[in-house]
Image (cartoon, rainbow, N blue to C red):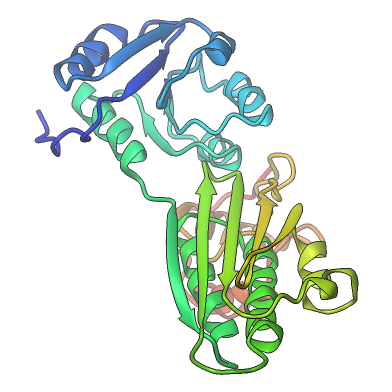
Length: 310
């Protein structure tokens, strides 16, 4: 058995959604040995009236539509999904709806518990205080972009979120502190189960609330997010922004590479196979950022049997 890390300081309440009872007996026993509480439900819809910390879902086949509907209603509980096979499309579909971790049958109870505890431990938030300057806008945006890359947020969302934060930090320096360097700008970021990002920016300068109604930085930031709230304080101002992360890979198109930063072996084989079989450029959806990498990969001798995609 794998040597597990010490259990979390607080016991977890774990929902086992396992209609075919593939994991219930051994996994529930292992969880209870780690002092966790186990709630067994037959269907995800039964969780509506229950509070749990993590969901372990073993869908019949690879059918995750129930979990997708559950998350579409705004439920942000971290989830671990046990798939029956290693199909790329199944894993891709699970990631699109915000699944926290994936595993594939057969999976040992100890490994499943490790995944459950790791998603509960995962820190999807950070707070940093920047020193106001003309450069703090770029520094804050770069830090946020790096945070989002590590959590698998695609390029189009990263651009939108980081651009909005840059506008708010710039306003704090430019208007809150009247371009005075060295004053504090506190930025807090929290990501909720890969579906929502909340940003709170706080400064201790002069309120610039009037610009919210104009065409400046706050107005631009407002158009980039789903919610922007300005709260004038006794000293300074607090601005809260909320962003929804919507799926951007439409359908199950295996030739849509628009929202990836790098190629894993599976996606590289798919892309090269499509190009080598003279698929139309209109069919492929490849961003300019992959152009150099793709060109270099095309120079590699084709030693693997490559078949055209359907």
